[in-house]
Length: 169
Image (tube, rainbow, N blue to C red; front, top):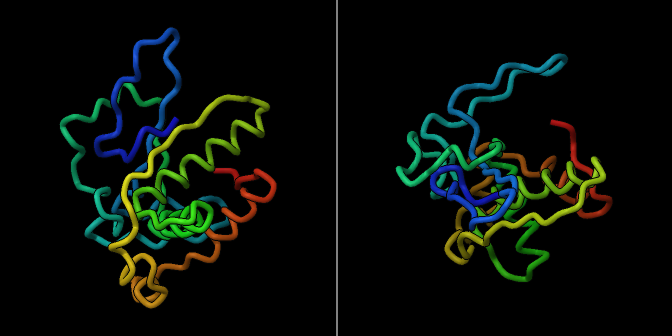
């Protein structure tokens, strides 16, 4: 289950046998991803790292224990903001960008579990309230000025919330 952003979320689960799988989310690296067959190269993220407050630092927190994380999922800023907005709409309260990052990772994991016929729980956190992001993450003008397009990510989330499917990685 996602345990939080990649910077400090990896902490050992309570003692259990066997321990549940764990995962985390993080922004893409500050270099372009290699192109996939038939696709143009992805536009590189900004040199400063992620626009999502609290994640995307050049180094991870000292408390991060990579040995307790089974896998990490890279989440583009536009996907984080789309999931943040969708989560806020479903919950009826504003959540912040890092919560959107976690939701994107959790939605993908749930869809993978469903497709594989697996059952289980996926746990994530509401990391931050979204009240202070009205002029940025919740502003369509700010999002456009950043060169972000939320539409394809919102469509992915809408499809997931409708039929549980998620695009293949």
